Length: 301
Length: 301
Image (cartoon, rainbow over all chains, first blue to last red; front, side, top):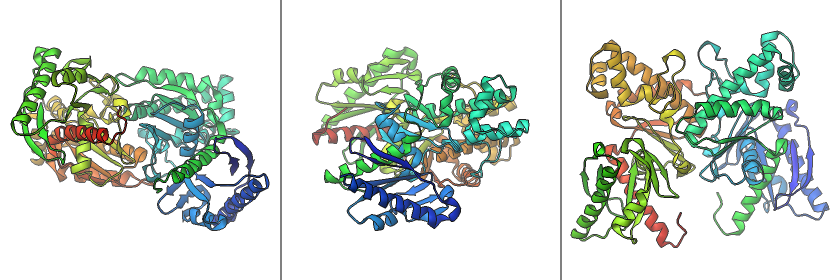
């Protein structure tokens, strides 16, 4: 768990990382979250601050109406996260739940690589792949379901592998950091230390790394062309650990997308700027937005 | 050109159809539009009405900022349509330009099959295929570029045909009404009278019609699954001439999408309700929205 205290202007006053006790079960994960929220509130008070709102983001499906979360990685199924936090903190705190990647995209939109855009995409390539879509000036929610570009099919025919989501040929099965490591291992019989090692092998001229990388790139280019055709972003920010590869990753994507587009508006393709902090910062910015909305007297959800 | 006079409540007071003099060139098309707008204004006045706003929708790319339109079918390239209409009618009329399919989707959202939805899709299968996307309660614009689902790739490998847009394997190359007729003709050497005849042959058990139809369905199912995964609609309204086939078209799409989805929220798949009137009605509704916005004193674009 990445957590922090963030001022209204987006300044990060404190940050820390805690372990998620997934092995101890769903309730233990929730208790660890509640303990974190309470202790950070106490720290804020000790430092002379007053916590106005709590933003919690998770890799899962958020039901904003009911304040519940379903997240496979956290073992939660319709878990009433908002009510639990509210009970732990008292009623005078705003609690805002969001999807981690969408929150990361919001942080990139407000303070990072997507600043100034009204149509853009944040695509972090991590263990999995999800997207944060900015459309006509707003971060898309789709009632918590939108943005699953990682689970759209970009591998066809015999080559399509079964994805964890139950579909075949998902972008995530070839282009996530986890997929690069897994697929390199499957080709060579060697166990590699994550996508980073595959990228190092690639830089050293390893032929298998080049093939695995080329397959990932082809699917990513397909995905970016499709997204551009459907939603017309002016800028696409690639994030996640893989973006550490810099132009090795970005230059071929840019060239591949450029070559494929015909009538579409061509987006800039850039590296995300906020790194692993994006989700945590976005959680806070989304929570602060909620506070501002309330004080303006406008109705809240 | 489908045109009409529409009251503020959406009631259609008058409708008529005029020919588009495409063969006479870009200027002639524009002049025909201007003549239509002026004559309809005169008719409105003669009937005791006052035209407040003009909505014009075209199958092309609209630059809302500059009021210009590029539309291959009309031979227009950055044509200053808004300024021309404004000059023809005088400055006290609002003029609103929009994409024809998006306008049709807006009409379906306000008065048709998408009523009550906040995340939905209008997908007319006509000569071409474009989509109107409703996301988080709003019709997506993407600066005029969004919604080109017809020009995303759903045919792969050897089978992918060159599309008019310059890309290969676009949905439109297999699943538009024009594609059904063309592909049936290419398979059989017979000239058919449009997609309607292919559907009749299908109903009569024609094997070639069944193959052409199955290929269209497979691509459409792919497209609807992809759209559902990315944008999470609760309802999808299929429009255009092909929807006259009713459940012959819709039932296999519904079954195919249902079978493919795993974690996604399953959309209803229904027939659009407004038929060929949708674009014309949507043009008027969008124009009326502009009038209301102005009178509330809010800034306009």
